[in-house]
Image (cartoon, rainbow, N blue to C red; front, side, top):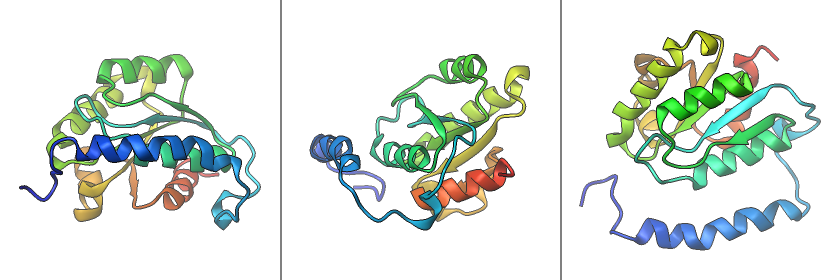
Length: 168
């Protein structure tokens, strides 16, 4: 078995147990990290779970929750969203930022293609691109090489990096 692979069905099984908790947990009071306090709407954030073909969405859904708690206007595009749909939604929503999560290294070509499509759209030239996930944690220079503006290793860091990118 390759390092990036789980036995067939295990990821989906785990996701089936974790997803309902993601819906219920925000209803409970808790101490939030300092980066998440006092947020007012800062910018629009297009959350993109993963590139076309990638179905892993739990991590980026948690990141999306961190952005919402911090006061960002977020919208979640879902798993397995084609690049042309992402560009169309970024244009329609006039989004300021696109966050892309990648779990498996074999999806890096699709990430590069998505970033290229966003950069090629005149309506999306000002969109900042934040990437995260295992491949970017393993290879810190990778975000720059594929055209992303920045990367983050955690949900909390994603909010802080995004604020820096947007000069907030």
